[in-house]
Length: 287
Image (cartoon, rainbow, N blue to C red; front, top):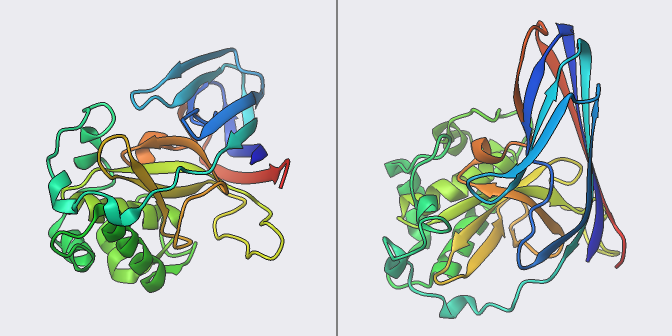
């Protein structure tokens, strides 16, 4: 499936901002199931300096410096991406989850995702919540899938219930939140059981295939989870929609949590507060 993606971020400031510096995670990352055919980034006012590099996790990042007074900053990212179906995975034949606790794994690709991060810390209440899905000897993929389905069943999507800094304990108590909360909750549950899990940031196709319901999270940046199933196998799970991520999901970046891969972050001088507007459109180019 090939897509054209357009992501618009607009900051409106209460006063002049003479200088601003930003790190942008908006270029989709290539991986074995995803090819990036084109990407453009436009900044208004024009950036005095831009520089591209890959971050610690292998995600493409653009540094942007705007050095003229402005009360509005607009960043438009456009890309064409091709997403292939995942190879068939027999969930029942994945290793028992206990066998992956502390199992050897490349620190750069596996082990670092088993430890605490800024927004996701392993905790007894998260382990207690996750434990019913992790029976003795249960294959890791079926256990993680069961935990994902429980989050989808028991939690309500509510954009007014949380912010990006809402603690997981509060999300667990309220049973409400958005895709970022549910992804953090799934990551936290998996890590609290001793497993490696990545937070994945990206997009969903805006228009569903004929006859299928529209997925929750389209038109904005979306988040889901990738759990390590041994070797080079990772399984992508979307607790917001209660499904295994498929060709409707476009990956932009992955890290330990949202703090590693936020689409736009930066430092400004002045501004006197700001308003933020974000819109995402994902157009399938073939069906």
